[in-house]
Image (cartoon, rainbow, N blue to C red):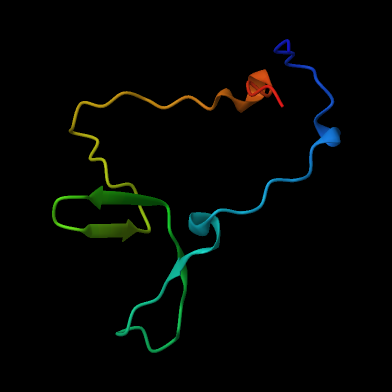
Length: 79
């Protein structure tokens, strides 16, 4: 198959939302019951710890590489 950025994407079913698209965080201290969407997460495998956050876990002061969303160039997976 050929990678075509202008391919008809309607031929594929809409992707299902991931766990993180559906996950909300609530605080026991919030009496109003506000919910906040999970924006980022961190996995610490050796300590078996999953951290969910409503904001970025990467500090602006830490050197990091910007992520690029390649979906605008089309489907790179041959079906």
